[in-house]
Amino acid sequence: MQRIAESELIINNRGAVYHLNVRPDELANTIITVGDPDRVKEVSKHFDKVEHTLQHREFITHTGYIGKKRISVVSTGIGPDNIDIVVNELDALVNIDFETRTIKPNLTSLHLIRLGTSGALQANIPVDGFVVSTHGLGIDNLLHFYRHDNNEEEKQLLQAFITHTQSQDSLSYPYITGAGSQLLKHFVEGYHHGITVTCPGFYGPQGRVLRLGLSNPALIDRLTQFRFGQHSITNFEMETSAIYGLGKMMGHQCLSISAIVANRVKKEFSKDGGAAVENLIKKSIEIISKI
Image (cartoon, rainbow, N blue to C red; front, side, top):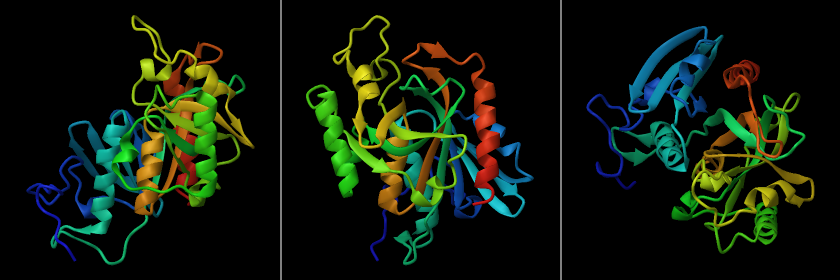
């Protein structure tokens, strides 16, 4: 088995992976990711016991238990570039032997569940509601740096999206990945389901105009109007497609669940986004602890 060089996998002097500052023994196989570092403690306060509290830069990790279920919460920061760091390092912690710097012969499949915020793209999805992403559709370029394949449904969805949005000349070529089926089936009642579009920014890439004009001013309307069979685009944010794409390639089960803090169609914003996120955490963590 080929040894992974020190420059490719950086391990610090306490035996932890570089950016996350987490050792393999400090990570659970069920992992909740949150964008905001301050949100980690808002999740772990529901644990019965916290055994590890770690931090490096914007990456904070708490690992503990709800009953007998061991869970880690990791902050990712914002955007697909941060997800590239986090998912690769989480995978390395369970699937690379840090002593020999070789890939383990028996690989571990993690449960990666994002609890975040998002903007709705359908009028019938209310502010403070919850959306589960059946697919992550990326209009950033992260996955194009990796070899990846789509199943037939994903190929058809992607082609329909490109044709409908007429985005081939103004956006990075999109990519799409489905949610982990083992996780998706547990989050039905009380959750809207649909395709989540992941953007590489918050302002122009999500159709916001402050002082700069947009190259594709019709994008939001086209996202809202997209239909393919039973599929529609419910929301957009900045991490889901990267988690789904990298996670699937590595053999992990991934799911993204969002509290809706804005409805871009109705031009509404939550009056208490913190309460919406707390409700999402409480409802979802109860399910997560039983999977």
